[in-house]
Amino acid sequence: KQEVTQIPAALSVPEGENLVLNCSFTDSAIYNLQWFRQDPGKGLTSLLLIQSSQREQTSGRLNASLDKSSGRSTLYIAASQPGDSATYLCAVEKETSGSRLTFGEGTQLTVNP
Amino acid sequence: DAGVTQSPTHLIKTRGQQVTLRCSPKSGHDTVSWYQQALGQGPQFIFQYYEEEERQRGNFPDRFSGHQFPNYSSELNVNALLLGDSALYLCASSFGYEQFFGPGTRLTVL
Image (cartoon, rainbow over the protein chains, first blue to last red):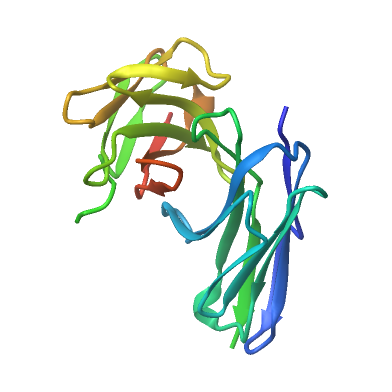
């Protein structure tokens, strides 16, 4: 059974700091990994999707890496801003799961002005 | 493109009642998945519909059922509501590998 763990559970940083969020998964037979952002009480916004054959993806100040063999992914946020405050979730799609996602419990990020 | 839409936004029910939640997928998407997200937790997969059939199901009791219509929109039905069914219910649509989520329906069971 696929399990996804995110560390840390919560993170508070001053504005402008670079930061790294971690995601690990137990079954390396994944099809892809997605990082999402969730604002309080809202739905999920897709940030980055990394296919299993890829090592990383970048969008603006965000960079996500994937090490499939070790079951790890990181989300790097450069020059953090108060508007980045949200919960960040990673989710993996197993190779045979037909787009069923397994989520971690998220990292709650607070960026202080 | 309106993206994935869900209705209603909020819903309050009492134990034992039945509820129906609705989802309209992103234009061109033919697959709809439903997730339950309890407070402080990550979303949990309920089931997925494709071509009007339930294609796969997570670890949820039969009180949770669904339907997909020819226009790909979908409904989630929950019977005999329990206090523990209180959660944010998320719908996701896809065509291929990337999933797009709606804003969710907040269900409160009293």
